[in-house]
Length: 251
Image (cartoon, rainbow, N blue to C red; front, side):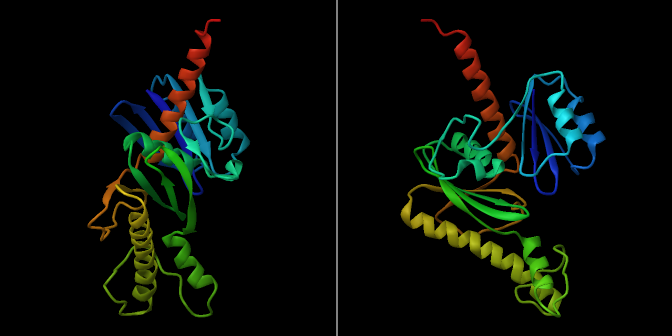
């Protein structure tokens, strides 16, 4: 079983992967004891972690001192099993590239739009040739709600959970429905636009997109909450295999 750790803006997502067997736990980055407990919960063979934030020194020391090989994935530095056209690879979020790797290996030969709904909503595209073409970043639902409150004089801060009628019937539902419906229509708009240019389009939702019902009759839609961990796991296996291949190379 491999240990996969995806450190995002809000949570640390820890996953144990062994074929189809998956164990997952999500904790705060400040909860070092819970991170430690998960890291020692199984006889892991190897591990990989990525982070979109600067890690506290104690967490960095914990991950570098585990009793099994643990590599850090860094965009633009760590070798990956797909090609990329991104012009500034060092600035590309590790979770975005990991998701691209995971999607390209799950649906080979397909054009794939990857939508990761979290603090931000990211839209990334992998071609049917297995090449990462790039992507866009947009505010996520919670960020939209906070922005409407922060940059206006009277709009309240509305919780993400709550009623979502077709039309807002008060200020709270108007704000919530505007944020959520706007995000859903944005996703559908991307998919429709790309489906006119790229044949055999798949849309893969990950992150917080599991509750969305997209109106895309001519596009295959999948949801995979483990897309980023699957991609990180493939990067780990690919790099370990490369090392093994080098050990057995002969002149």
